[in-house]
Length: 80
Image 1 (tube, rainbow, N blue to C red):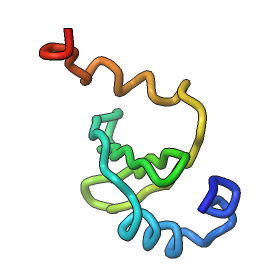
Image 2: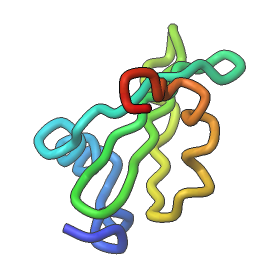
Image 3: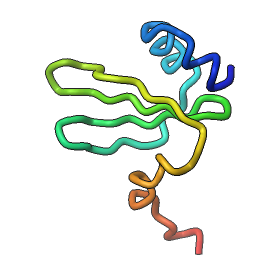
Image 4: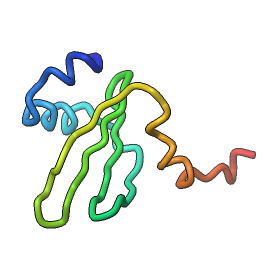
């Protein structure tokens, strides 16, 4: 599956793909939300959760610019 195919799916279908094929990479907090970052094939998906409303939105992308909020969570200790 590629990014364009994923974006054309309904939110329910996207949720199923995330559950079946997504690899959880990271979790962060954003204002009132918890944001989970998944990797699926050649693209990324952010799932925004609100504590009382559950899933707020699903955002998908292939570039690296939107990965910047996660970079501070990555430890290079042990690599260097």
